[in-house]
Image 1 (cartoon, one colour):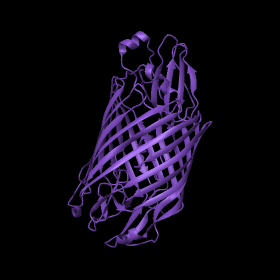
Image 2 (image 1 turned 30 degrees about the vertical axis):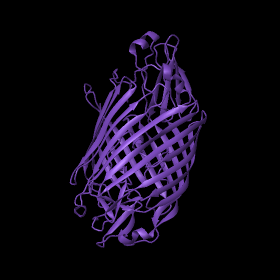
Image 3 (image 1 turned 90 degrees about the vertical axis):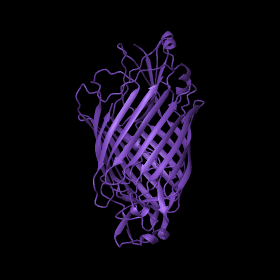
Image 4 (image 1 turned 60 degrees about the vertical axis):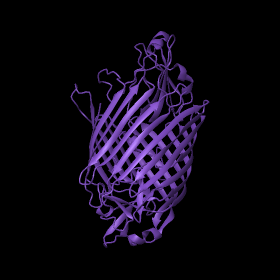
Length: 518
């Protein structure tokens, strides 16, 4: 009773509530994002819980146990630490004890215990889209995560695709450790295999091995640093190696204002926003991004720099950003019946798409994002971007001549996105539409990782909980993922056999399945 609960997040004031006579507490009207919870009470050691993810329209239930000094000496291990978006968390690193966390979708569910072990299993399938992309192959994804002594975490995840083409697979093993000073170093090894399944390439498979390492820490009480790198080696018609560093610096100018500088060398992974890491539907989601010229592998190499300022104004979040991109060997996405006979197309039979080398892109632009939380069940985002893209200067050209007609053009893009939860059915959904004022082969602001990020044109993502028997320790959800549903933005090009194929910002993809979380 009477414990002080402090809740803090990125660019947000610290919210303080108190526990009632039974030790319960609640906080409402919080914006989606990552939060840190600090709990303190007389005669007890303070507790800190970090990286609490709050999805749009959802609630998160946390049970936190406060320990006395004697209990903490018996328990021993320190609470794992990771950098979050607040300005006071790192002062508690040395005395943070190990809290108990429980996350439930339904507060009426019975009490559960945290065994520091999480696992999930998913099954996905696509449907034929009549030459518009999205193959009919199926895939199975899995993940297992284990916490060791609260400060160490190991995980194994992957996805295996199977169907008419040769199998494709992604396997990732990761380890992270929390240090008393608040930093959180991590290391991961990722193996990927994608099979073009083309006789012109002797059925050669693209195999990639990546070793990544990263860290995050706080300097003083207003500065956060995140940095790391990835070393990739690719085997496909030869060997290619790439070094991909990244980093960001966040300056908390005030409780409601954050100034950030970002540097990246690969496209951001935005699947985490949907709460589900689906298998790649086509090569546009596969990392590394590879194309082919004269039967020689070309690896996309990018350099992205961005400076943005975020400001919270009541229930509104506003971000203004300027960016500069340099991309070499841009991997353009196409759809249609093609072969690799000419040595400049890399087909992916499993998804009905291919990649085509678009040479270089030098882009500069501006982004403005406005996010509004109408209620706990509905959030809206408006995103405007102006920047350079690659486009064909001449329509209906021959594919073998297309590269000489690809030029850099200025485009404007406007995107609206709504997300929320249907209260009675607990259905979680994200709907978006991104409009561009002209044809384009690459998206405007392709490295956008802000709240306003969305795939080109019309998209819909739905997660629907499925009732299960009470004695089963699993939570099931149906998943539907529709991208570029109206097949917009297709730029026609004449293929070698006289058939029309298309270059696209994003191919239409229709996928669905079920996920089981233990």
